[in-house]
Length: 329
Image (cartoon, rainbow, N blue to C red; front, side):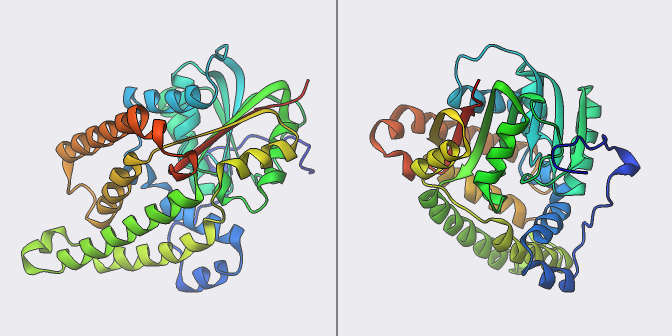
């Protein structure tokens, strides 16, 4: 089967079996093979990913996904007919966009069988018309001119050849079809976000070793597994983007009307410590009150970004980049 032929839909037992618990030997092999690392790392995260990143499929995340879409591609005629999510993870972006009226029918693809399995399960629970493929973004297994819209969230920085992937996206889009990718780390934003995360992680682990905070300590087995996953993270996160560089990649891939915008400065300074702290303590320890506080803190910081930071701070200093473009014709 070539990349230009459509693979049969997969679901349930037809999906390759995920490997959620990578051994030390598998991690060692993956350090030399970025695509194996992508599979192992994202299979490891699949079943807990939504909880780890506070992902939901309710009004909160529907609004978030729709706002990301409107930020980079405002004024679109909705809904699109058939949409594809590339590197779907648990389906967060496409499923919430579909609930928000952006697309009627969906397809999800990811290199990780575990992620595709969870995304299809989420779609089924939501009653959405979605099929799935385990697929490489550099060779998308659909025919030319299949989709009206292609979307992705935090996926381009995982792909070895981003220009080739965008060229594939344009191939499977119908003439005049659009792609929208959000959540891509900028070079400067990634630098400070990583350091905020590292400081928060090491501080939390050190504090929870104190006797008084014993109940906040994650089991050693989970920490060891997190350490193995963290080792793979250096392999799966391949790129950061200067906004102008990302725009040029889209143009070289053959897209028209390429537009790149950025977001999250103050929001990143709030979000990264919060997310890292949540990952460093036992699951279920923080509760609904914490989740509400964290979300409201992020919303307040986002308001500052919109009302203040974007008026005085250059785009390259924000954490997230979003890109859209259109297929010729």
